[in-house]
Length: 239
Image (cartoon, rainbow, N blue to C red):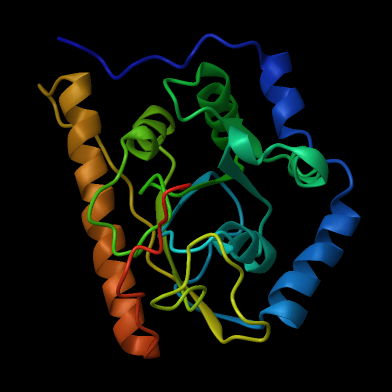
């Protein structure tokens, strides 16, 4: 019987370097400016566990979704961020606040090992399971988030980000300053591997469970807040 894949063999020191979080005082200043000054963000929904491992499953419509959630979430979040973002000053900032670079071109052992270690230490890891910016309606997800949840037993918390992009805007453009943005937290849940199911099937089934829970949460949050998802993907040829 095939098991859930083991944690990638990357040294603790390598993961520790990725997870290190110096300079958090100025990270707090940046977070205040982003979610209180530039784009005032209102949060609502389920209570957030104050301790213990947690995987955030977030829908994705705009380039600032990550900064918005990082800025307003009550705990420090280590996001899996595509390696292309680690350039110049912005890349330096990402490293200084302990974000996890991931190469989306194939299995990234270092990134997944760092995420697993962070969760086993009781940290919060943020994932955009859709894999790319789009409508944010979660019609499909990648399996990485399911693998993390199965590997560590960490609860998954659905997060709906609404208002960061409207129809007709590119997903890589910044929203108008002071636009109304909402972040809505759902109820956390755990995924488990049923007895007699192969590791591959368990990951596939768990990914579908995450997709359904997140899609339903986003749909309900859009309805309750009155902030609709964009009608288009916002993508262009360079995305």
